[in-house]
Image (cartoon, rainbow, N blue to C red; front, top):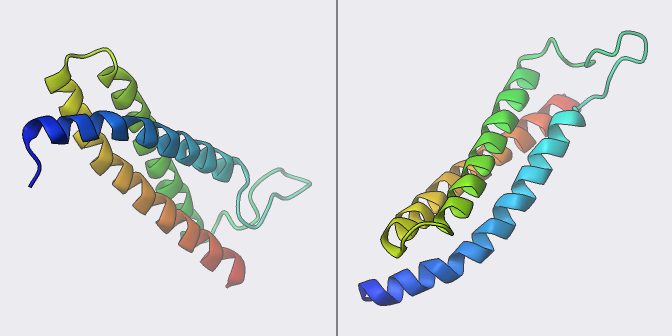
Length: 118
């Protein structure tokens, strides 16, 4: 079992990895929000599959994932300017929020694939 000092040193090193993962996830979810599954109608500019329930699930899950990953970025950047104890708390909470973001992007991917294939 790790001591408090070992765990805090590990979390401070983990912050750099979490920053990269959160940045990539933010970019992916941002791009997915503009590249809608099914494409757009060339005449009206509306999403072709907008009336399907899976499209709403895709949008909500993608938005949730993007908001969570942006929150992780804010927490990790904020942890750089805090004292060590508060920084460790922010990094620890960021891991859980990033996990939620990964779940949201997984749901968005599954609903997008379901929407296009069905």
